[in-house]
Image (cartoon, rainbow, N blue to C red; front, side, top):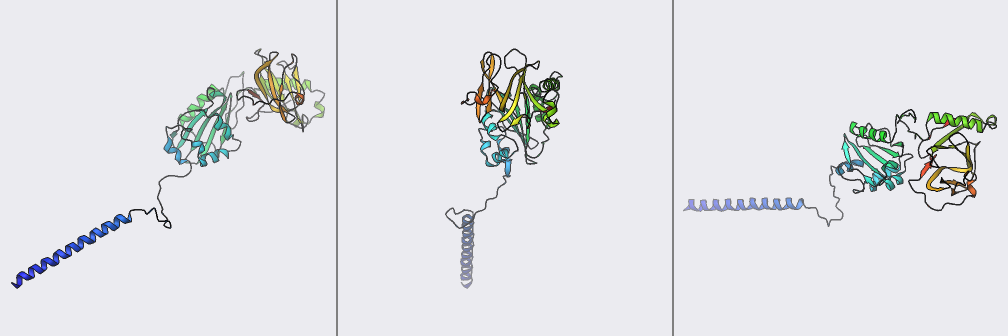
Length: 343
């Protein structure tokens, strides 16, 4: 009888211990679940969330195959601030003309996309390259037959596929090495337009100026005997006229500078005084010649051909109150590099 009681007592003890152990396990499990829940109502507790996202411009790696404006990458504070800080680069122009675009691609940690003016890519086209590994930005800006490259830090060593694409676009825009009838120049560090850099044309204009200014030459210092030019067909006869500009104290004063507009044979069409480049050649014409716009006396003035010449003092010409269209041809526009020659 005693042995039976002993056995029953041992069984009771074992059952009690098992229940106690199970209850402890249950409590631990509940407490563990409670510990995994973040109390969003706790104001004082600081919550640290680990992230694998890389900083800076690496957000672009999540946008491969997508379109820049649709993804609003130019509204990104980091990217927009860096683009705005690139020396000489016009960020607002990029935003204005980036209408038609290609998707974002990446090769060897280099992001690339391109955008241009709708229905007129040759007039305003951009190639954007971002080197994620070296944290650097390059922008290639195509405008007509000119190319200007803006670098944030240094030149990016582009993958071959990107370089080949650029080379095709340079060839199509006649940028780089061109035939002898135009100009031969290097893409690095600057690229000139064939309309203002042809050596033979510059030599011809130099001889014209020596003749036109022969009485002034003895009064001028060597650094004043320099000029820039732009050739353009203003009257539609398929023969280029030359707009010649100067940037020194002999030809410039507080009101502006003197510019010569010459026929192809060196004959003077107009000598403009108190003017500021660029001259803008409109599509509209008067007496068969394109109307011109130029800044003079703190206003934009319109100059119309009277059958023989343009007004030589733009400051007294009518003010132009409209906004010139983007496709109007700009002459001696120093947004792009213009070579200087001597005479």
